[in-house]
Length: 377
Image 1 (cartoon, rainbow, N blue to C red):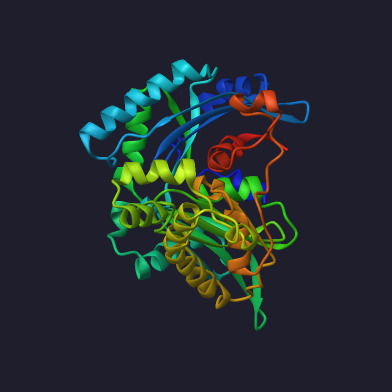
Image 2: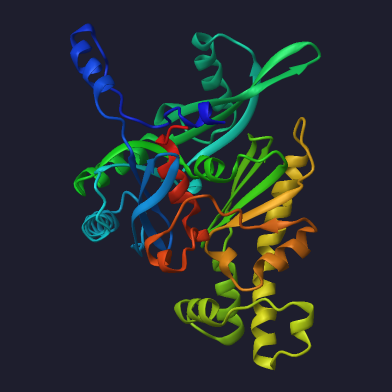
């Protein structure tokens, strides 16, 4: 898995010539980097983290989270607010490096798993672009397209490459670089959220479905024996629960969000017999909202099951803000009839949890995985 994840996706490249030989030699002689920083721009929050990797130990050395501005890239007001938020985070977090890695959200990218005949690399590029033209609903010339070799299969004696094809609007890539540059940060690379999750949770020998359930979307990936088998961005997340509460109680979205975070709980079978009427009403409303999310997850997994060489899911790992809802893990395990856990990575201490020696917050899975991108090992 490591050799796949070390490859760049969207990165500004400089041509090296023989005149750059002294520079290349100096880079080889320079001290090995031990600090790596990442930024995750979510719907509700922006998270910035810096990790230190020394002596076989990985530790969070700086962390900051702030509310995310409302809007989209390309909107002047939103980009200005985003630049200000990033500047404030750099100052308050105390990160020691200005070179960061960030991710492009699944709603801004198109990903497809494809199988093509095994070809030399020089021929593969043209084949990938032809494949992209078949299913991408946009002019290929307006997209930045990359592919990743995930493995090789053999069908009827013929060798096929399993590729993950990734495409993003070129304007979005440039917008990311522009915003971070204005904030005084240097983007080392733009990664995918799915790769960040794979990096954190993918080193498993079982067939595992990983779900990062955010506010407006859910990132799903299936990993088997450490190899990425399937990815999909589901356009549904925790906001379904918030809207259900808002409709049930006649609340604004913001009021319902507060109720969900402070009072939300999915009751178990034993709890349902002793809980108050108010708690049971909240439980009913949350379950109603979750029904839509569960339906979309099942549809995606049903589609995965139709793919070549698909395997039954033996385990789920959940992360993201919605996974922190009381009773959610038990509810999801019952709904999917499969073991579920949070799969905490072996990284010590986000700052606000150090006193309790807690090493992991499920909302930070993506940003931690992104920061781990350049960690050798």
